[in-house]
Length: 230
Image 1 (cartoon, rainbow, N blue to C red):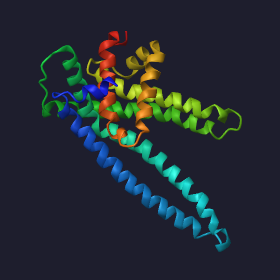
Image 2: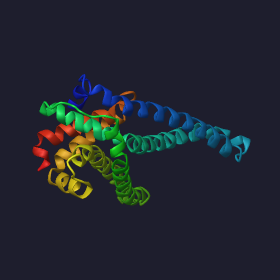
Image 3: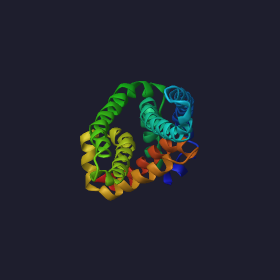
């Protein structure tokens, strides 16, 4: 909630603009593509069914829509954070300076300087996510253990969102992926609480456009106020 307050401050609004535009354009494009995919997949499959099974379209449409929304959600989150990562690093730096009462002196050259390190950091997080998401996904298919799969997936999603957003303020202090996870593991309830809240807002229409800059600002405030997670 502090992140929502921080991004409205006059000195920070300009750092929110680019992540917000990335969110709107990317989500709109993916949603448009998903609608086309649902229509094409439905027509393709229904073409193989006899006329007396036309009623199955009533069941197939909700299935296709659900799959499309899941695809959009995870693609949107991954790609949006990847594209906006250099700007998120600047936002985290600006938030921390404001919290300390320091003067902001950040320009476009800072964005250019941070592009390669930011993109490499996003790639490391993506590999970390895939190595754990695939076994969890398989767990959904195993009778018995699949009862626990949704709960494990929610915990994993909360953990990943915390790692995603705490990376920006910590990387600004030269603390990278392994050290970030080590410190977060020392405060598991704090980490999961922040990630679960970010996950909740990510699922709320319209508000989810603001989640990325809000979560970056909130994670920076968390980093600054919780004794730097030490």
